[in-house]
Image 1: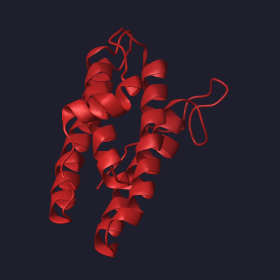
Image 2: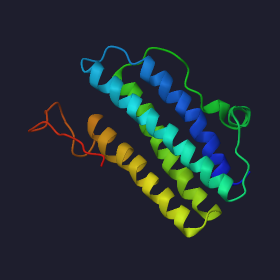
Image 3: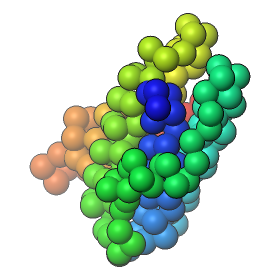
Length: 158
């Protein structure tokens, strides 16, 4: 297996994990908004799996299946259990950083045009982990020491 195939397998497991985190978010006063946001991130993974599988096939790499993904990354599975927003976002932050790192590692297995696309995907996952979630978890740019932000912040992913 090359790094692109490993990335696809990792994303397959993370798609499942985001579903678990989506369904088991608990005790969040902004549950509707955060529940929907987690679902959007899960849908992003699904689209990236599709795009990367098609790219791998075009490059002559066989598509890894669910069984391969579970054998390789089964230890990454998130257990179904109620979680508060902080725990959920911390797990997602870690997953996002791992996805970005694996995308960077996969760049060596693809031609430059595909490496550029991987870099675009990496940017989105790093932005999620290092800005959006860090801010929501009280990191740089977010509510610190119990002080709320001066004004509501709207995020635009486009």
